Image 1: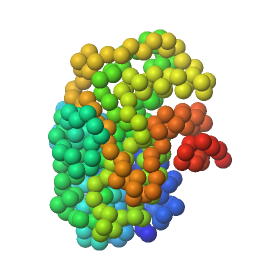
Image 2 (image 1 turned 180 degrees about the vertical axis):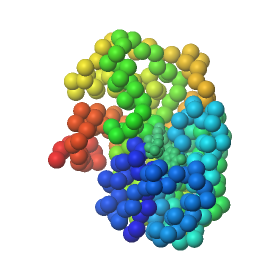
Image 3 (image 1 turned 90 degrees about the vertical axis):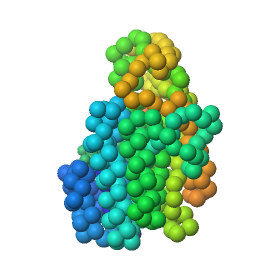
Image 4 (image 1 turned 90 degrees about the horizontal axis):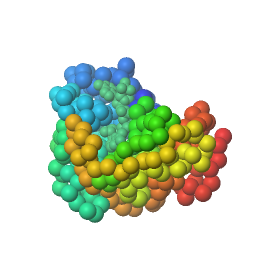
Amino acid sequence: MKILLLGSQGQLGQELQLTLPSIGEVTAWNRADIDLTDLDKIVPAVVAQQPDVIINAAAYTAVDAAESEPALAHQINAAAPECLAQAAATCKATLVHISTDYVFDGQQNQPYQTDAATNPLGVYGQSKRTGELAIQAATPRHAILRTAWVYGAKGKNNFVKTMLRLGAERRELRVVYDQIGSPTWAYDLAQAITQLTPQLNEQTFGTYHYTNSGAISWYDFAVAIFEEASVLGYRLQIDHVQPITSDQYPTPAKRPAYSVLANEKLARLIGQTAPHWRVSLRKMLQENLQPNTAIQHDHEGANFIRR
Ligand SMILES: NC(=O)c1ccc[n+]([C@@H]2O[C@H](COP(=O)([O-])OP(=O)(O)OC[C@H]3O[C@@H](n4cnc5c(N)ncnc54)[C@H](OP(=O)(O)O)[C@@H]3O)[C@@H](O)[C@H]2O)c1
């Protein structure tokens, strides 16, 4: 299987570069190989590769900055994926595209199924939803995989890394407790994409959700990060995390209050449920201490072998 990966230097893209070779021959493109704002170049460049599968891990992911750069967010998150879908249709390739829990408005109080009504609250979510619709219109040969609260040791900016930095500098932090979601380790997400891709065919194309299992607030997540990091020997100053409401921490983009995704459809297809967020957090924190060490683990998270 010839796989073309876009966004190869992002936090998910870097994990996919490690997991995808088990299912095919991977060509990995980053921004230097193709800038997704050069819309006219996308279809010819992709078609020239004649891939069997295109995996799009590239995106405009700055949720707050998107509010002041809506045109750029839409170009990268909607117009470029539409071009990728057109290229996929031309080559009869399958497009695997990553989307987000922020397509939902967070008014539900039970996990969102893949066919739940969308209603994004901000520009980022709108741009990702427009991308989903454009892909659906351009080719049936697609999987749209929504995920949430992604973090990884290889990510430049994510919540875990921010908490570790602030926790090393400050004794007290305020973190919102009225947004509920499911943290997702980029490594687990890459494994799920690698398991999903070979299963895609006329019967299975469509929309999927994948996050780590369990649901918590950002406040709960911050507390868990500090607890787990302390056990692992991270040097931290923090001794108090104060729960606050979103109103007490205004941001340019409004975020959903509840964006837990129902994962069962994907779990049934790949025959595996997602690891619990706390087990995966622990593994990420271990990897982060030794960034150059490749890791292997079983899916129950019981054994943890380094090589
Ligand atoms: N992070 C989250 O919490 C989260 C939550 C839900 C869904 N998702 C989705 O998950 C996917 C992966 O996200 P991630 O966390 O891995 O994001 P990330 O670390 O920000 O990576 C995104 C990648 O896209 C690339 N990119 C941005 N603009 C580009 C352009 N004009 N041309 C070419 N490449 C461009 C970036 O390249 P540079 O490295 O050169 O900037 C970066 O490598 C995305 O679809 C995102 O929407 C993420």
